[in-house]
Amino acid sequence: MTSFGRRPDLSMQDLAQEAVLGALADAGLQTSDVQALYNSNVYGGMVLGQVLMRDLGITGPALYNVENACASGATAVHLACQALRLGLYDTVVVWGVEQLTRLGGGTIPLQRNDYKTELYASQGMTLPTVYAMRGTRYLHERSESVDLLASIAVKNRQHGSLNPYAQQRKPVTLEEVLQSRPVAEPLTLLQCCPSAVDGAAAVILTTKIPSSGRRAVRILASAVQSGHLEIGCDDILDAEITARTARLAYEQAGISPKDVDVVELHDAFTIAELLYYEALGLAPDGDGAGLLRDGETALGGRVPVNPSGGLLAKGHPLGATGVAQMVEIAWQLEGRAEGRQVEGARIGLTQCTGGGIAGVDHAASSVHLLGV
Image (cartoon, rainbow, N blue to C red; front, side, top):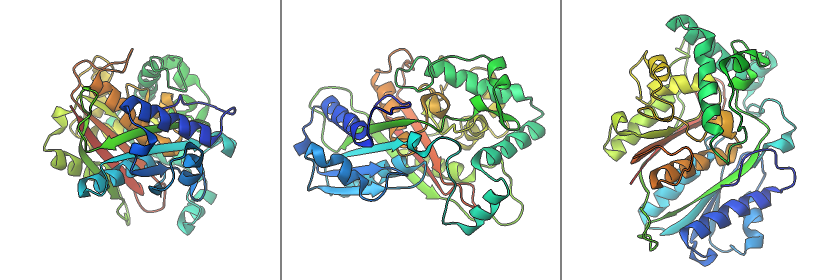
């Protein structure tokens, strides 16, 4: 993957090619070995993948452009897995890329073709406000203080300081998080992932046995689901789509949450990470705060979450995020995550949600389980 950050000196083509060529070199493959390509992106426009790969000479094979909001990269991996299992190909490349700095900063635009979302947005409903309501409700129902939410940002920024690919590499204190600019109560600026970030990530997926002799990282499960329409009063703390997708993934892999050693999850806002602890089965319902407070999700804990720094520190270039999570977990399982290595990790989980549309928890959710 490329480093994530403001990259005005590079084009989207530069970013994608750096990631793809890096993945091919890492796998010891040539461009001629690639039988199909999957490009994930949200704001790049039509046939972006073909534009990005044209000058590399990777032309001719099937190329799929995948858009599924923040879950685009994870969805592209899922589709590639299906094709490999069907025997359509034996070696494919999946990459994600985004240049959010071109949007000029601010909150990421909500869905433009959903009349209900437009109505809600006109009354101030944005993703930060949605998560702020969840945070407020969580603190009320669990009798917790704002310090709990802020400690997620402290943990992930500490992890990010160890990751050379992360956008934010400066550790922060609890006081700095709480005193950063208010965004939507109780969320402050440092509790929201950076929205002005560029970057790309790529993975090679194959059914062949690696010739390098390196330990093979296997995809044990790949699950994608869409959101249910929720009518009337619903529990905004119930991350239903993520819990449902995770159950499918655990069933596919034949393992339980207790078997997971390391996690990369979608911490677009601090409250999201807390909710996903329970949705993914890392903690019993109602005990996510205890998992965090006991240090179990920090490096050195029982199940480190977001050792890369997560979206809060690494950054969130939408189309690249799901693929970047796969890269981090692969590095962790191979023992190559220098400075932030989870010792002895054998099973890793990635989780990514996407899409803010009216009436559903999320439009899409993906969970992958990887193992060695």
